Length: 406
Length: 128
Image (cartoon, rainbow over all chains, first blue to last red; front, top):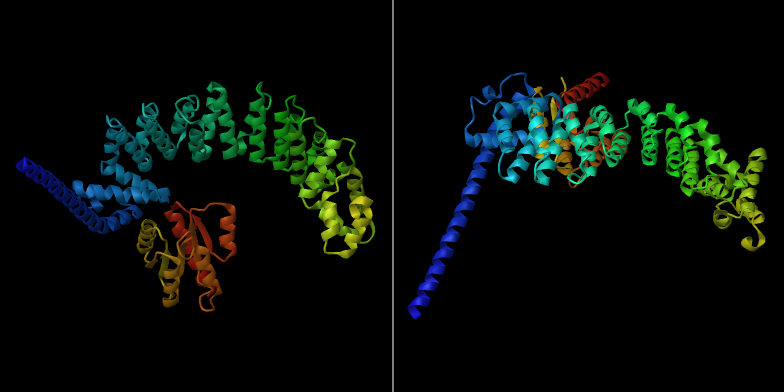
């Protein structure tokens, strides 16, 4: 019995000892390898960078021939590190180096691997390697069974750029069960103006969600050239499409679209009217002041609110229109106008003018009296207590109703 | 003939090595600092043609390095080019208003960066 126990303890100790030796040996081997790679990197990196800055065609010449498998690992790291940090010709040359050294070919093989993590890693590296040869294989990887591989392939296509990549990615907007629409949209937005043609072309073939995503993408990229197409969408049958077209036009900010946005203020659906009002503020359309003033009497709060904000955004002429509304017969219009004038600091400005001479003082007094008569006296009460100029405080106290001033 | 020595300040060693290599290829002498404190030590000790400085760094950021240079009686006219991933309008405007001679967004185009550096140095030569 005792011998069995001793034997068991010795066996377990032996196993632990072997494991410890293996772990220490592995760590030592890794450190030695990293040290060797570090030393090689110091030798190889200047050669790669000098080649990248030059006009020399083949990178192998700069490296004195085909690198060893060990050097290739170091070179891959050097190229991946630098290619992410530069643009333009140097980036293209680093990408060429990756291709010439056979790395692109290796990643393309990796995309066919049975291991999903190898496919994902290969997709990511193909994006960094910026090889146009990778567009078709990466497009196929968009249908991979693993979401991580699909996502990295999509990001890689985004990095590769170009209309062909954009067309493949737009297709993903139609599959919300397989893709996060927001992620795909973000990748397309990151690609910039070159996707515009592809998303507009794909629009009729997309689901409703896909179409709305396209309108958001255009609104974020803000291409002035998409203006006429967006104007067409203001007459779409779907309310959301019309509303988002207004939003996109507002983001683009081209003042030439003001007449169409003014027309959209009469849309039967309030979300479209609200977005049209907001867009008019963004494009700074002074010619829309009369229509925006009418929109302050809209039945829907969002339309009134956006119209008031738009008038403020238009500038002095818009603020004057808001001042004219403080005595409006429509209670809601009046309240919105006063709210925005207060937010814009216009009430404080006018209170300060109470001590000025002549017509300026009269205009300020007339406006503030109208606000008091409308019953919205919150800010004026604060000014009557805290305004730094005593005469202003006195004037305001005299203007405010007895119970408030006491 | 003036100094051909340029200081590259970046806490990202890979970027610093890339810029250093680019400058050396264009016949400049290069010094490298990995943070703002070290950069200011070098600026005080060496006669430099200009500084290429990252914006976001530990201890002292690029704005702080720039401010220290502009406030120094001896160094206030040393050209400084800021380099940053921050591409927002307010960051660019702030950098230029604080006295940067130029602002380049990362990832950068190497040839464009060199053209900007040469332009700054030519302007400096003409002024002096």
